[in-house]
Every structure is written in structure tokens, then in C-alpha cells.
Length: 278
Image 1 (cartoon, rainbow, N blue to C red):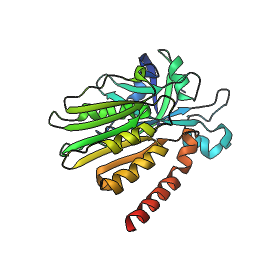
Image 2: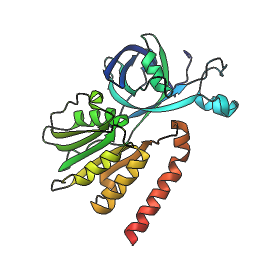
Image 3: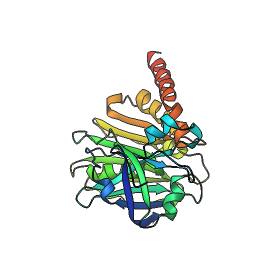
């Protein structure tokens, strides 16, 4: 994995830390991040690259080349993760991983990562930063969105106000969120309920403050769809004041979800347009 093209970044694990029951923080560094750069978004993300063990890939390694020259069943697998922090001076990239034992691909990797391990990635991408001119901010998500919510809160100025609603499985999954802004944080414990059910209820019950809101709502696609309809149709929030997307979907891995996400979004938009027209 040492030989990479310039469209890839190679991070070397510097240290790891368990920051809650189901969240592991991995800090990456090394010369392979020399060209890594962010642009001020709070939701920057990278696509982590996981080649199959025992497969001989073309050199220099490139996901694009692999997909052009190799059978689909051995294409390197990609997993999308939010950048929790990037320190260009120290050249350190921090990623937080939700882990549930051996479930999934990236989580188990993070669970067992040790200093010296390497991780190849593409990116970063991103598109949201909290508007400092907004009257108030609404930040909503499940545990997969905690890194972006945490980064957003750190980006808010002292004059900002925000309501934050985060759903996690249990109190042991809470983590410290730092900000200088005036913020009300509500932790919602899922327990055995479907993902997002409690969040939908909480947002519906929330008394919205006066003034222009800038909203960030991400997480499991099912509840995101419900909240998009609520925020657009019942709360009257314009799309240019709403960053909303299904990060993942129950029962579908990251690559399969990305393959259908575009069509899914178009159906949601069409349903929403029909509801507005009626």
C-alpha cells in the first residue's frame, strides 16, 4: 500500500482512543498526508479504501485503475467517514468510528488498529458549514453523525444559538461536545426502538425559536426522509437552509447504499414536490 497515486492519501495510525462505549477514535499521520487539505466545511468526509487480502492489485495502486482493469468482485471496498478533525501543522487526521464488535468492515479495523497500521483514503469532500449569520442552528443525527455535529459545534461563534438532538443507543454512548456558543443538547436513547424513531418524535415536539434557522440533519435514511418532509412541509424550511442526507441505511452496506442513493433522493424530492403542489 506504500506506493500510491496523488489522488490517494495514506495515513499511518499514530494512536487510538475509545471515547465512548461504541466509538473509537483513530489519529492518522505521516508523509502520506502531505497533500491532504480541508476547505472549512464541518462535514468533510473521506472514503476509506479496504483492498481484499491476498489479491494482487496493479501498481501504483489506484481505485480507478482497479475498477477499470479488475473483476468487480475484487474491487477495493470503500467506506465513507466524516473527518472529525484535521491539524495541518501536526499533519494529523482524526476519524471517529462507530464499532459493534466484528460487525461491518471499518469498525472492526478501527477496533484493532495499532500504531504503524496504514489506511488508504480518497478525498476529502464536504459541503456544509454553519452559517454564522443564522438566527439559530438545528443539528440532528444518530451516532454516525456525531463527528460532524461535534465539528459544527466547534465552528459556531460565541454569538450563535443551537439546538442539538443526538440519538444513541444508551447513556454510555454519550460523549463530551465542546462549543463556545449557546447550545442546548438533547441526548435521545434508542434502546430497542428503530433507529431514528425517537429523533423524529423529538424534532416534531421541539419548540422552534424565532428567526432564520440553518439546519443540519443526517443519519439513517429512513428517519432522515421523515424529518425532511416534516421540516420542509410542516416547518417551512427552504432547501437552501437545510443540509439533509441519509448517511446510511439499515440492512445495506456503504457501497450498496451509494449505488441507489441518487435514485432514492430523486424519489424523495418528487414526493415532496407533489406534496407541496397539492
